[in-house]
Length: 207
Image (tube, rainbow, N blue to C red; front, side):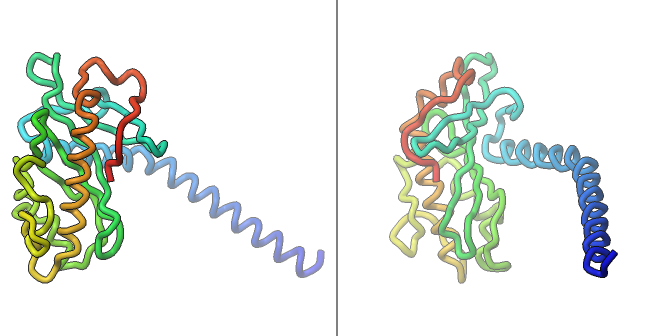
């Protein structure tokens, strides 16, 4: 066997062993990872729909957007279980300082925000990253398109920017405003308690 073939055999064996190892690690960790992701969804739903009980595994609606993508709308029933008392869905702010900012937002049937939760971001530590602070996220609670200009105050709106960081709050505020506009256009489908057996085509974009 030539040296070249020996190297091919050795490298092939190493790659095969590494592949088997990675596959084994994936099998061992996939369920714990999925469980942690579910806990994260539950935590975010509790934050954006305060006072309402949600079951992310059963009472949701997958809605198709006009561009072919989909958005999962988590819904919370009222006490009687016959009406939707609130809905939560993810929006993306593509114009953060360091890329996409993923946001969960909760909306009540009257169009008012239950709250927002920052799911993930890559904003500058100590500046744009302050969008995760409860004190800043809390300013969105109870706001709606009817009573709020979702621009930051530097741009003439009602949303506080952060000291030394305007881009990140501006991006989040813009995404939340678009989410509320989307909710308004698709309100009837989102609140249809009987819906959910098949995807519903929606109007507009959520991000």
